Length: 362
Image (cartoon, rainbow, N blue to C red; front, side, top):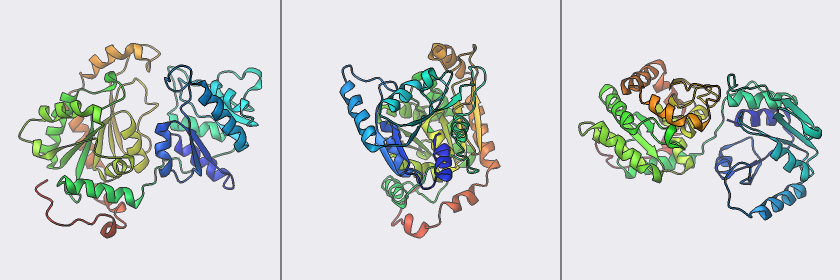
């Protein structure tokens, strides 16, 4: 969700060297970001739970930043995050200009201060939030889509993985991702399975189910719930991909059906239609500039993103019938011109996706 703002910085200051300081998860994305020149991985203490007594790593990172002699730092935060720890860190590293959004600017810690205006009742989408931040220093662009640049290697790797599993790449498919970072954010796996069965019957497409190794039980529950009659068309791709091949899978999907999270953002970056089962009462982190349907139940109270409301919301999310998920997906497929969109990803089809031999019934 930061990539449009990074592109705005690159567009406004093309002669500048742009380094991304980010977590391990962010660093994994760096090879796919054409606007980034370099990446520094840093698991900051204010961003993740770390073991105690690890401050020497922070002191070493401060020295590294000081030695790199950066001219400026743009600090990106979500609504619920405080930019002052990162701003203080950049100050101690001797970075002379510091841009961030904050409700206050103690002791002029920020040279370029954008006052926080979002509230629990009214929030910008996080992409727009970041674009507004960098626009304060004149970094603007008309290309405001999320950005992720895949490599031919990623597409060839995807083709090889699907070939080994006897899944035909030339056959349209739907990607379903039932996992999420927290249990309360997940639409029930059984409902995912019911929706997947309805989609197979209505479209005769394969449904490719993705997830991490720890999400394997969710995927198995989904496939059982779909029922034996459609199981040959519902394929388990648990822990099958690195990030590049996973993104290539998303790129070619007819539609992605997912809990709100990483797959939704990858789909947005690649222009793939997405059905987002959103577990929050706001759309700050929803799909961005891609065909979509968002299905969510609101959570009472102004602090809708807080985990204090998790149990209540998870109970109400079960009220979304699986038939609504299936209908939203079918409606989105009809709305989007899938054959034309797929053709745009096949500029080097003969070289990128060479398939040999029989691929079976799937």
